[in-house]
Image (cartoon, rainbow, N blue to C red; front, side, top):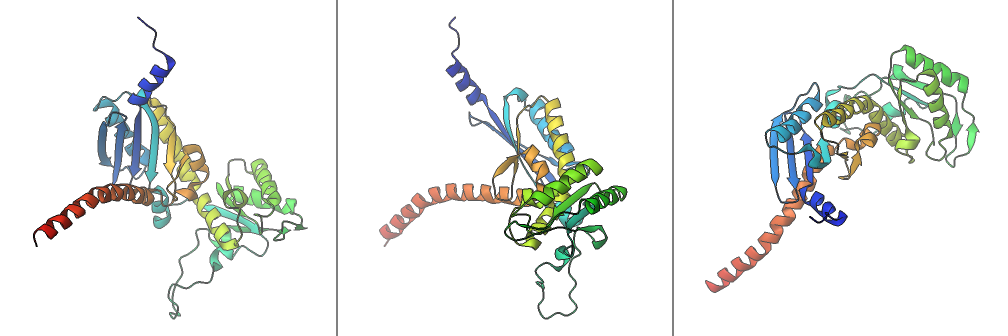
Length: 311
């Protein structure tokens, strides 16, 4: 019997490759799996809000056990979720701290001074994700072009890190003025936190969104810090559960821009996942709309011909 060539083996694997897509909504968790032979599996189960990974893994387990799918053939898992938007809308977020430049801790609350109702003098704005008592200032200043105007006060930074640790806050957003032009001070503060509060999860604005406009950069970094603990735990449970089921495929998570990112990066930058669930639906709608238009084109021409012939 002739030995199977490497090329033939690769083709065999490609033909049997199964891709799995999982979407977690507020009520239902949907799973769709497809192989290269046009096989399709659809599974819908109830979402488990207290721990969404249970529902997701339950759908995968049903695919493997009831549908008889070999877990070794699953090569890619793509995941879309509304967990981020639901957490922000319901306020189900952990206690978060913000460390910023002296004099700028209220940027998060002032925003752009836009009012939802221009002539309503009694309008109440939504409270910021980080209350003022958990927003801390540190002496430092960098100019718009990246020059250091005032060095970082490391002794004050150490005191702030220790205070945040004593308060039991485990996730911290760091946003210094003009750090997009020079990230030195934010990185130095990160080193101080890793020494003084090693269990804290840090979101540095210079790494997440190195762009100008202080409110946008601060608010995005705060959102990221609020979501980090949730996604770090959830994605870790999901990956560990998949491995226990025999699925050793990489997990990609849908971003708000309709691209995907590996689960490790998603757990570090969950602010990119806020529209993960809705955008997945929009991309699917675009795909199916295109298919319908391709079918509708010939149909419309035929209808026009029939109408002309009936005159």
